[in-house]
Structures are given as structure tokens and as C-alpha cells.
Figure 1 (cartoon, rainbow, N blue to C red):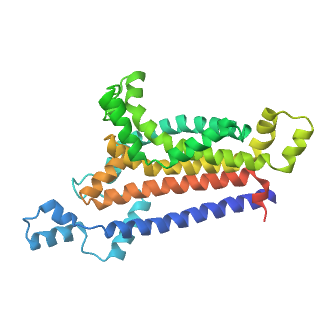
Figure 2 (figure 1 turned 30 degrees about the horizontal axis):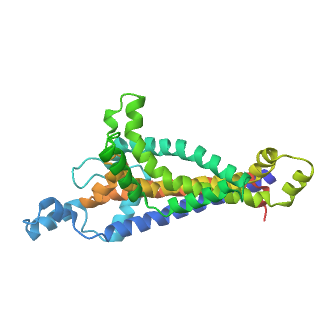
Figure 3 (figure 1 turned 90 degrees about the horizontal axis):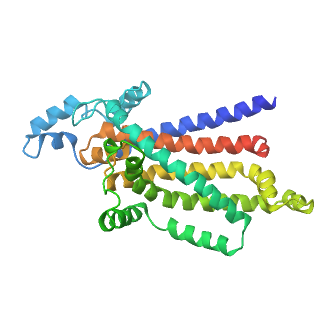
Length: 319
């Protein structure tokens, strides 16, 4: 019976996720349709006649009503067909497929650095709460969160690429032929993304652990003679896994927005840079597909955090 209730709760969360994704698709299509400019005019140039522009719009299907274009686009998207680029005629899936591994590699490198570092700092700050180390961590995290990614990336370029000349200002994945070149390519993009992500994750991890350390069962464990390390690892941390997983998911979802800025500054060949190029050329199928990937990844991370919180806390599985 309990397993059935848990399965029903998980199914409800998945259903809400699908409904949210459907609403997001509607919002993405509506917003991209309202962007200024006309792709037909962009392709033909300013010297094109109105008749030529109208003919190209008809051949691209841009003269159809918005609701009809949305239904056609959504139906094709469910079948895995994101359409063709309005600029070069190539399939959007192929264009994204050539860039997606690069973005996943950048996200994986950032997660491998940021998650262990943030958990270590957040747990130790909670263990020694109220100390000089805790106050220093709190001050630094608040300061770093206040700094946007483009400022961190620009400062990194000025320091490490312009003045010190240790790293290249542009990140070229094709130049990677070993560990040293991998570190040189990913050092500044990962540093720029980790600053804000680590700071946010540290604050949320620290808050989740301190909330558990104030619980009565922790006081009882201390009265029984449990040391600080055992209190953290055996009592507080298992009960804080849900909030910590939520903190990791929310922090990594913030990575999806920051990667757009970082890939643009460092000219990194990922899907965020591809989406920015699509906006500049009014390539709406490409922009819509990239936006849906970012939105779906965000919803997946939030849903994963929600499910982790439900599975780790029995109280959330019952009304």
C-alpha cells in the first residue's frame, strides 16, 4: 500500500512536469514569435521587393496563423523533428547535435568541481557555525553571489589572458589533445560558472544542515556522547539530504542561464552560443529548439530535486 502511494505521488510529480513543459513550449513559441525582425527580410536583404519577401514567407510557412504554426511545431517536436534552420536549411537536430556534447562537457566539468567543493565548504561551515571561519564563508558567499557571471568572465580574461598570458581568451574544443590543453580550454569558463554556483550551494547546504542541527534528536545524540563528526554524518546529514539535493539541483539549474553568458564571452561552441547566433539571424526554429532544451533541463533538475526530497523524507510521502 505504501509502495502504491509512493508510486502515485511520483506519477503525479511526473505529470505536473509534463504539463509544465507543455506550458513552457507555449510560452517559448509565443515569445519567439514576438521577437522583432523578419527572417524573410533578413535572408533577402533590405533591397528585396515586398513580393519576394511575401513569397519567401509563404514558402517558409510564416504566413500561417500563429496557433496553427504552434500545433505543427509541437506535433513535429514530439516526433523528434525540430524543423530546419531558416538560414542554411540544415536540420535543427543536426545543428544542436554537433554542439550539445560541448555544452554537456562544460556542464559536467563545472558540476565535478562545484558540487564537491560547495558541499565541503557548506558542511564545515555548519559544523563550526558562529566561528570566524563560518563568518568568513558567509561574507565571501554573499559577496560572490552579488557578482554577475559576465563580470567574473571579463575579469578572468583581463587577468589570465591579457596580463598574465597563462590562458587563451577563446575556448576552442578542437585544440584539446591532452590533459594540459583540456585544463587550459576549460579553466576560465569553469571558473566563471563555479563562482556563483558554489556560493549559492554553500549557503543552501549550510542552512539545511544548521536547521537539522537544531532539531531535538540532534540534542539527544549530543547528550548521549556523540561527537561533532558523528552528529553531522550519522544524524544531521542523512536527514538533510533532501534539502541539499534541492540546493544542488537549483544551483545547477542556475548554470543553464550562466552558460549562455559564458559561452558567448569565451566563444565556446555550445548550444547556448548557437542560440545566441540564432537570435541574431532570426532563425526561429533553432532558437525555439535550444530554448526548449534549456527549459526541459531546468524542469528535470527541479523534478529530480523534488523526488529526492520525497524519497529521503518519509514525512513528505504522507499528508
